[in-house]
Image 1 (cartoon, rainbow over the protein chains, first blue to last red):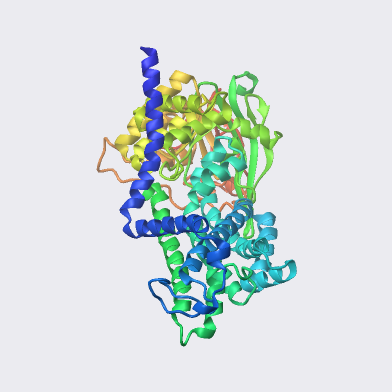
Image 2: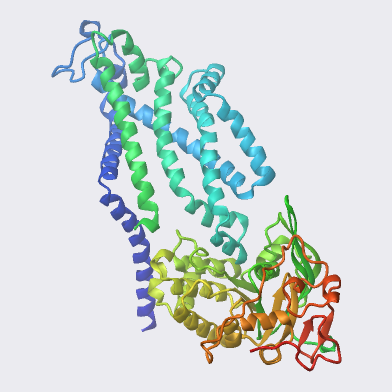
Length: 297
Length: 337
């Protein structure tokens, strides 16, 4: 008898756990634009994972073919070819993995550092806040692209340095957003109540303060992935991003600008890829924010 | 006098002075507050808004926001141990375990993004052995105890009504069987029918667990309902203290009289209310003599210049007012309706 009820209880608990995730999922599905964003993001991730497997880097992605330069879109080359005779479709697809992985890794690094610094500054206030945020202000005062240029120029042009440069530029933005969000939650009564039950500062920050400040952080994160992709494209455009001949949307845009008048399709496709990626990430971010908030059920 | 008799005290506050030092001046929130709560008994702390009631409650947990709040002098003892000399770590072990607090507004004192059973389980995990599953099980038992089906533990605070939220808050406060429960106006945010339910429940739980309680309120009806003793607080000082009977039947202080006269009279519905005139004195600029003097109908010259001392009517009842001395304390001077 006892055993049966114990089992029953266990089942109930696990059902409850699952239903929370299911609830979030259900709420996300109700938001049509968010689902659209999610579908496109999943597609992009699949493309990013599959294209390096399907396409051979040496023979299909970077091999030049001077008999086939600047072809307009056709059955053989749906997006046409570039000035070195490379297929733009393959290069655009292949670039997805580069752009997405750099964007995501950069944002994870920046988010981790920004989360720690921002929540410490917002929660403790006073001198801690003063010191951390003034340092962040110094970084914010330097234009992100300029900062990235300085770092890439001094450390050398490689993907890791690019991630470092972007992360350094993005960290203060996260710190600011997290600090602001934490400060609005810090003085709420449930935080006081958490103190009154004897919780430690770290427990309060991770259990009460951060989960309640998630909304702006999630939005900032998705927006930031988009903006990092954009700024890598920008850096590649001025020749400081992904080293040639590796395909990257920004670098492809940069290469095509000389031909924009006669061969506009060359810049159109990588440009479209950037636009779709950023749009879908933003849609997904907004939808996630709404779905994760239990109050909006 | 009464101090000579050794009592079993859960909490004891002696001569506590708390100030809030702001840019605009020093606010004297508590000025020599004295308080004692006997084991298993309930003390009512009654006073107007701004009298220092909540500050007193927070002092017992040492949670006065600092800065700007500073405990200037005095002592606070829990179970005979001075908490003002304890380390932060020792205090964290006490909060929620030995002393628990029920906050004024259940709408805002629950974390909106955590399920209620998780919030209750958090207290248990912080102070007791056993893992997550054990804590969750106890949390559900606590919910049942306050009259909420345990199966609703997985829901979020916004899915509960105000009265149920207050029950959750109470369940949280009682989760670790605290020795002292501080209830800061626990029913202010609730409507009258729910108030009665919650009070009834608190009474039952108090008896079941033999918890001492500090009931902070401005509602004399609640005091009559649930308290054993009453301290009337004005401008950060206890101006009259006694048992329920002392305070309700043998009112001495003009301020306490004013509080009673501000209540509607059920027997004479035509009677006009007689509220206390004026407002609480500015706590950053308290009068030199008795703090109540500017509003008092019985004020004398001495009231303006000298702080009144304590006069005992019996072992349990004292009052701080110039109207009384040893000889005339037994005859009341104020006229209650």
